[in-house]
Amino acid sequence: MQVAPGAFHFKGYLSIERQRQLADCCRELMDGDPPGYVPVVRGGGRMHVRMLCLGRHWNGKTYRYERSRTDHDQLAVPPLPAAFGDLARGVAAAAGMELDADICILNYYDRDGRMGLHRDQDETERSVAAGVPVVSISLGDTARFLFGGLRRRDPIDAVLLESGDAFVFGGAARLRYHGVSRILPATAPSELHIAGRYNLTLRRYDLA
Ligand SMILES: O=C(O)CCC(=O)C(=O)O
Image 1 (cartoon, rainbow, N blue to C red):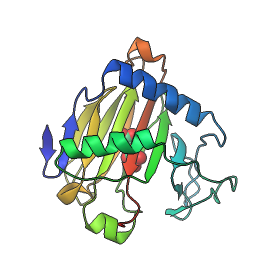
Image 2: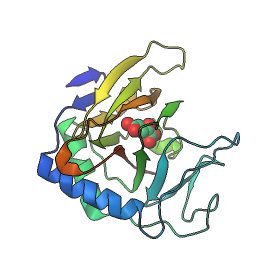
Image 3: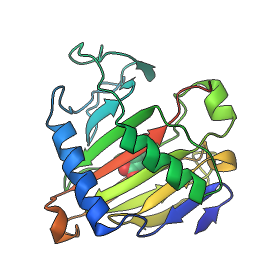
């Protein structure tokens, strides 16, 4: 369903079996080598998520992408699994867009997890200006997702993102403010064995 020009919410996009496979994969990645960590951002604040970047690392101190985690442990960034790229392509196509993703930011929210209102603008200017979409996939507990406008002070809608939902924002919506105000604990499908929520955002750093 289109929620705004360039923004789409696909409820129940993933079957429970695909959610289970993807959740297993997220768990392995988050607890793998290198593991996810809680970034400290430029003002010195700790984020309220555990983060693992694939393909390229988003540096919370510089707000730039890089090949190794220079704001944390210097380790190399794991590659983006091909299956994540395929998933992103399919969701983008359902929204009538194209995405050849080369980055995934995987976030884990515990019951107190949240993310402040922000714009995704750290991919290259070319990629952002072309409106190449960001594809978001939710697994586990429901999130209260905030979706605003192009200016911070624009009105904000609250959207519940449930496990298996996909959300896309590209084109005219690419630079809309968004965030997560809260997690609704214990709402994850029991088959997933998740306490909390994984969110994957799939992105394109630059145009070829
Ligand atoms: O968790 C979400 O649904 C949103 C994540 C997000 O805004 C981001 O990773 O930039």
